[in-house]
Structures are given as C-alpha cells and as structure tokens.
Image (cartoon, rainbow, N blue to C red):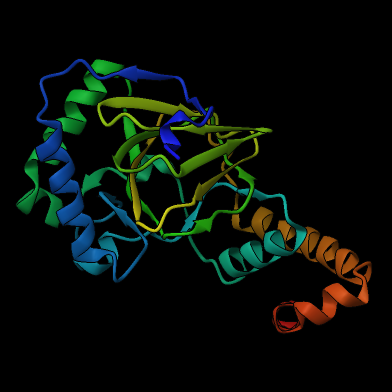
Length: 255
C-alpha cells in the first residue's frame, strides 16, 4: 500500500518563495539537532541568556509563562505538578532573544534563512526549537496559548500525522510554512519506524496570557483535585493494569 494515497488532508500552508537552499538548510538543522539531542528531545535555537553554558542554552529556560492544557486529567496533573511545583522563575516568549552561541558560530546559514523567513512572512519569532518525535509514538492531546505554532518540516514521512480537533492532517512539504491552530486540541502521531524532525517557531507578538508563579501553583491545586476525583472513579481493571503508573502519581500528589 502506498501511504501517500491515503486520504489525509494536507494542513493549509504557505509556500516559502525565498532564495534558500532548502537541502542545505535542512542538513544544517539536522547536524545541529544531532549534536544536542542526547540532552533534550527538543533542541532550542534561541536562548534568553548567552552567558549560560551551551548545554543550558539549547534547552527550555525556567518555566514557560503560560499553562498548557492537557486533556487527560492524569497527564494534566503529572505535567503541571512536574513543571510548576518547584518553579521560581517564569520566562516570557519575548525573552528568547538570542541565537545560541553554537548556532551563531557553526550554523550561520540557519539564522540567515530564519531571518529571510521572518521578512517574507512578516513575523517575528521568539522561541524557536527543533522538535524530534520518536518512532512509533504519539503526543498528548493539548492546547497552547496563541493562535498558531508555525512548522517547517525538516525530516518527515507519510506516516507522520497531526490530529487537530477531530481531523488528521499531514505536513509534507519542506519549503512550506504551516500554521498549526494551537488553540484547538491537537496532537502528533509518528506511526513510522523513523525519527521525525520539525522546526517549530512561535510568533513573539501573539498574546501570551502570562501566568505568575502564584497562578501556576493555584492551578496545581485545581488539577490535583481533578486528578484525585478521576482516580477515585476508576474501575478495578484499569487500576490493576496501570498500577505502577497510578502509584507514582499518588506519590507525586503527596509532595
């Protein structure tokens, strides 16, 4: 069976009619990603502070200034508790101002292409990262702040799909800019036996609804209550099958 013939829609996109060697750009992105992906599955191209060691520049700094909603009450609790419980610093999108020192020194062409892209699309990108998705995995269903997450596929294949609300889409064109409507419930599915890599870019000018530390910790109390209620309503077969997982969550709730 030819997977390209399956009737999944292509997510609407914009062809990037700019003077770019896309093969070279994609190659440089992969080299940069491969250098640091042993530290993080998401490798950042921008940082908030160039004085940090490079190992800190290429990962998320502090805690995001928004609360991402997960639709599974158990994962929502795990996500919130792990992300916000010990946070002492909230970082806004606009603070991701500087390309990492490694990118500046070794991959200036990647920066050149992104700057051309910003001018062409009339956008100003803050947080930029290369997001890998492991083989035969899927992400949680969630929503994010803002109107869109902009994507440029770097390495993909026909078995990579995006769930947006109740539909499935592909992003298959390497010289196109896709705008995933991140305010809608969405997820990614990599049904292939190979790694997928996308460049994710966030428009720094979109509304962010900044969360304070106090708001974040209040949200932890809310999702903990939802988790406890959901756990109390589970049937015995579900609890037995996933007993180690639920035991870990119960221990996390005590912290």
